[in-house]
Image 1 (cartoon, rainbow, N blue to C red):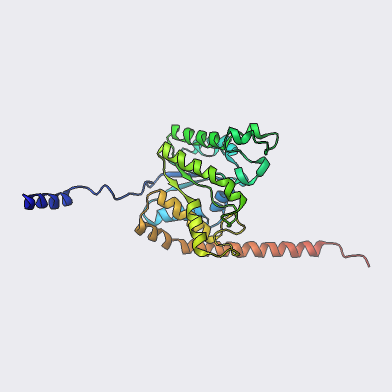
Image 2: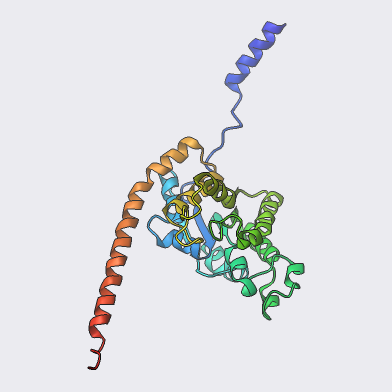
Length: 283
């Protein structure tokens, strides 16, 4: 009896599909909208920004997706909600990544409170009611996207200063907790970028050096790569597929270095021309 049972299980192992193996959720021809703030704008504007790395990583795995850049510097959740239809839904993407929360916290009195209780705390300016709350704004963005047939991928907000014990990161924590909870409730993929950043910062243990950002908030090369890895994992890429994705990035990093060089040369030229045009000081 035991031999027959073993034989049956062995045979079943060959004929039963492997339901544990994940597949890349994005398909060739899909559009991916990237909704966010200056971090997302830089993720597209920088030749090696995370948005471009995601698209290149998918391409390296045979998935040819079309990006829909929708990042605007300084934007908070209320502003993203206000432009959702124009910048995302009207483009009819199949997917939308949502990166939002840094400015809602970082802008202090001009920020967006987490909920109604926080809105009544007295720490915000006189226009706080018009901005609504982060919970309501984000929930509306996700609901409207899903109603339009767009599949969201939620990203936790990245660090505000690479000091994980900073006041700003403490204020940001309940915003990210809400995102994690909402992602589970809506059953949508999530890239927990804050957790990934925290793990990397702790591992590096370089308190006086910017490991992932250029200024404590906006991404440097390593930060862009870590964001891209998080998004690609949320899209279902496995370890082997991520290795393929990473192999496509050096070409983009080379283009980014050349771009930065030309920008520096242009700034130096503009400074020199300005100094040349300035009137000579009177003797």
